[in-house]
Image 1 (cartoon, helix red, strand yellow):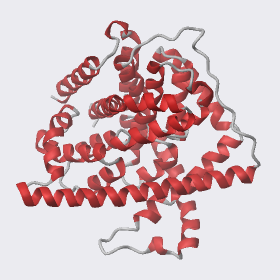
Image 2 (image 1 turned 180 degrees about the vertical axis):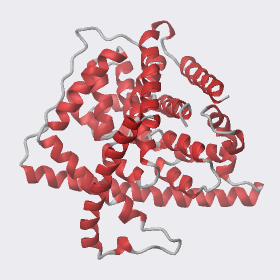
Image 3 (image 1 turned 90 degrees about the horizontal axis):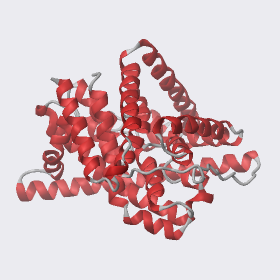
Length: 396
């Protein structure tokens, strides 16, 4: 039965992408088929094989060790507060989940400085361009987005931003919204099972190309297919390190501020809806998103709860939704896994402003172009998350 639902889910996702396509006759189906098959193979390998278990275990161990090292610095500054449980038996979220972003950001800066990350990003991107049938720039950008983040990635292609036509700019922005930055992966792993974080990272990379190839199909000529990455201004090691540490701290503060605002506002709206119509706002959204949860492989009896968490992610952000998922004790392991994969992306309304602002900071005219197709970006990125969740459901 789950295979039949998965097939229906895939047809729905591709159908919704096709409806929104701005060039139906230009869609190339062979690269799409290859990438879907690759998604299925990779999901099976990661979730159902010893090699996949070993890879995920190694990846999560690396981040666990990084978090342990981060806690040394956090405990030094905050006097061991991270070891104190709150009244609900939990640990301070800001200190234990968000502060380690500072250390991971610093590590990314070091890997950038010694030229390891640029090398990895460039050549993985070149390999992907042979698979997805897109340009080198699009493939580079997708890999860079998954490491650097949805706003920082545009700095590395600053030289080409002003020269890009609307359709190529859409693909770059869609990749940025469909992935997550490596600096916050550790935070996700403290909230949901690491194997679902890793699975989502891999599937979303290909899913972004798949949906963009349907919604926004085009061909890149050899003359256009030039990858010109901006070299960072030469800094001393400690200048760079200080900059990345501060950047990581800014990310943690921004996420904390958004969580305070969104969690409080959602609680307020839930209270108003419950008082007026007898049902909370999140429960109401759960009914709207329940059909999508069902085609992802969630049993119908759990679809409303799952749909509520999915909706929370879209109207607020993935952190708020992950917190809600962690409070759910009635959901099955299968549903938790499927929803977890759905949550690992930047596909939410606030990301439209973040991406448009990042591009506008580099090129005002192109930033306005991004703002105009912002809702279509969110539409495509959400389909990427649904697609990754459907593929995951096949192996749970």
